[in-house]
Length: 340
Image (cartoon, rainbow, N blue to C red; front, side):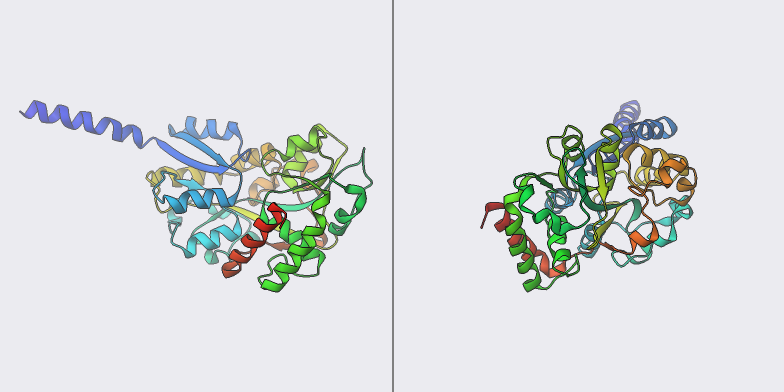
């Protein structure tokens, strides 16, 4: 009987031990270095199950529907960190398990979306701007230029309601984070005027679409366009005169995480300066890791597409949660998409 009990305990403990050597990561597509993932597993013995999403909304909806979906790490943007922490969807972080936190740039910490960073750790920061292929178009400097009749059925816009509405709000002289229902309605009407020029809304394939010249003018995130420009030198990224959105994407642990210690080890590994540098170089996005930035090639640090100067950054606005106005944005976004 004793031998049977020992065999049962061994049988039961084996899968549990195996389970402990896993971390389930849910991140944006094309947003991490494959080499960094391999090195994490080699260093720790922890297997990374890596799933991707193409929008904050997709990630949020999945976790909202099933808080125990099994993900140990998610990477929400600023305004979704704010929403998710307020709705109890994220764990409070035990920073004693994150020994590499001191490498982060203090200027990117303690923001209003997560005071004291109790729930999130900066992963990358990015900007949204204009994109032009100079083989086909003269360089544009303003969002309002996209409304010109010469761009009929040519524009690529991000398939993201807040990014798209921010363009119209900035053109109208409002904040991209405006929550006044009348201002959002005005932005919707302005975007209706733009619809004849829009050929495609897309998030996930932006880089390839611009590289292959399927589309040659529109908007995008700067990291995607930096990588696209490496393959097609005619592609330019422009910070619009009216202003632009800055987004900070953050590592966070959902309340339903089942491999908590492994999640902390993963975050801490991503905070190593050498790993943060590899991640940044692989994706084209700016690192919040000061020590990693110091190790970057000068060609990267001097490239305004990735690291804009302070004068340019003053035109940027960090994306914030719309709060109760989210329903207003959603209503007008749906109307815009169906041509209402």
